[in-house]
Image (cartoon, rainbow, N blue to C red; front, side, top):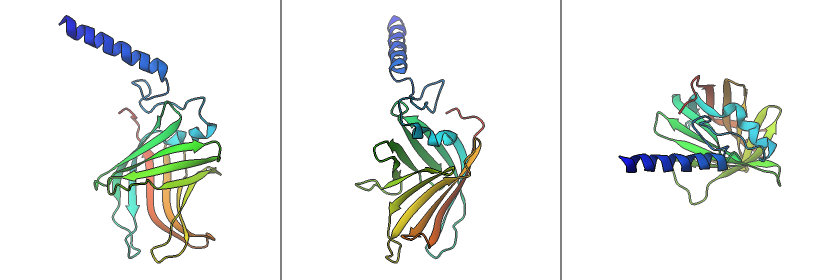
Length: 194
């Protein structure tokens, strides 16, 4: 019994030291972490999304029609001791995904690396962008299915304390052709505990 108590005491002391050393990481008090005051101020661009949200996701079929909507849990949290943001989606259809979001002060833009349970590429795709006029807009060069040059554009919009929307679109280089391929609407969960 003494060994168990001693192990628990040592474990709790080590955990307490970790909290002191990395105060912006996820903890019992702050399950989604905190933004680090030493991080670029833009790290807080995702502040309204931090926590868990119940969402409805809908993708477009190759023929242009929309698929049935899918319920989704979208969780955002601060990582790397509050220096970046990570998100994860858990979808009822079993197609889960996530991103690591880092703001690069040198280039003055977000770098967002995307990963998915549907595929495991040897290099993660990366979108670049910024917040402007209350929207977070990210782009990555991508050809259309029929070979035209353009971009994949991802936009967070209608961002508030209790909800946000997201849309994925393919756009041509002049942004005259805009083709939505994925839409998500989210409402923050009232209880953000893990």
